[in-house]
Amino acid sequence: MTFKESLIFSDRSFLIGVAGDSGSGKTILTNGIRYILGKDVVNTVSLDDYHKYDRKERRELDITPLTPEANDLDLLLEHVKMLKEGKRIFKPIYDHSTGTFKDREWFEPKKVVILEGLLPFYTEELRELLDFKIYVDPSRKIKRRWKVKRDVGERGYSEERVKREILEREPDYIKFIQPQKIYADATIRIFPSKYEGDEIFNVNLVQKMVEFPLEELNLNIDLSAMMMLSERDLSLEFRKDEYYGSDVGVITIDGELHHDIFWELEKKLRDFTGYYLHKLYEREEYINAIGLTQLILCWRFFEQVNHLLLKRETT
Image (tube, rainbow, N blue to C red):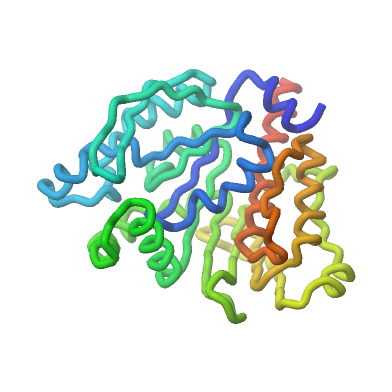
């Protein structure tokens, strides 16, 4: 039975929490899980839908959406418990284009539910319900660029307004959002690359050490093929470290990987899951460090869930 089949026949849903500031790239980093498992198995909840107040009310109260009191964490906890049991929820919908709420809608959880937002790890009760926790932490320069691009292009905000909001929200980000990285199984730190190019990044993937790796799944890189194919710079480093009191492994990736090498790594994950419909990057000749990080996150999540599935079979 493939990993995907094991998920489908499971009697519960598995929950991934993804925390980080607004515009930090949370959706991008979890796209690998969506593509490699398939949309029939994975769906997503935006935790912005659990804002307690609309945009006008927040201005009147002089609070940002990053504060716990601006979010209905009690309703969120109730819904996360139901999602964990595979039950559908009647959830609120926040419309970013208007800053108001739409009518509630039914949401049917699939076998993997990704919960993306500002405060998914804020309370101990929420943390205990999540099977895998990711914190996305780009540098200020990159986060500012990404947020301006998204909010201006997708949400119709002015560039001046977006930059002003970033500054206004910074104290609440430091107080409420940033401390959640302590609880993450994987923290993705994103910096400008030492190589040239706006879409080339230096990524530090900080992962808490695991006790139950998947022996049959590996992501070995063929160094000889990489040297023959690649005409661009790539550096890889692994080290053990301590991060907020936890033993971690830190993978540092900078530069770009040739698509043929990337596809060989992706194929190993797809052979394990049994799903081949879409490739992550079909047209790009080179994949940056964020793309490679997507694959490593998939690998780590599959390790975690496979261990939980095997544990349930033996109890």
